[in-house]
Length: 250
Image (cartoon, rainbow, N blue to C red):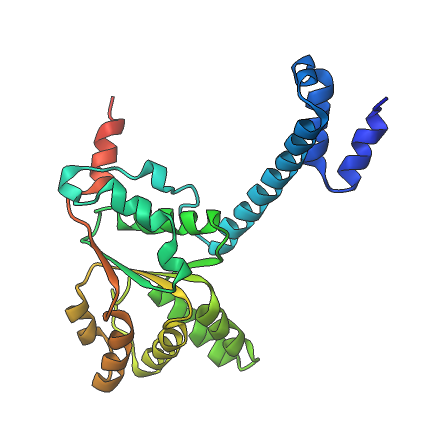
């Protein structure tokens, strides 16, 4: 007979979800109609599901989203946004992450590109890809601090930006970048090209990025690795902050 000590042992063995499912089976007579093999399958699936859920939660935390709860299920499809469910579903399947492509989301302020990019990042976490979300200015500040510290952390942080499976760069070229940071960005994009996926969000069109990068040759080198062959999403429509604010009004 199963005792409380047996359930405690399962917790100590780090299979708590399996133990909770087993307790449910013991206390619910409806499980008696299932043969032994089916009940074992349920126990294994309960533990596997719990472990996967914990891993996804860890990946979401490590991604550093501003809005960790953003998900593709909550994307709003208004006709004016020029965004289809089918396209979002294709992107959420993360095939483009698997084959190391670049996706660029362009829209004016308030059109919801922030939510969409984080929702796609969340979808990648669910597929167990490693993800990092950051504004371009924050990436450059991070590298500048590490470079000034001269403690070797610069190379560690640079390698992280180069190798994360999905790097989401927000506010791309919102502010100009100087020569040293342009070199850093080139090194990151060159290392990621064909080896890791990148999601870029910007208020500017690609032909405007060139003007924000100090050094024509460096600008050409960076943009050649981003703009060529990328998938583009041009978001339009109403200001989504105002849209949701109106919906909340009594």
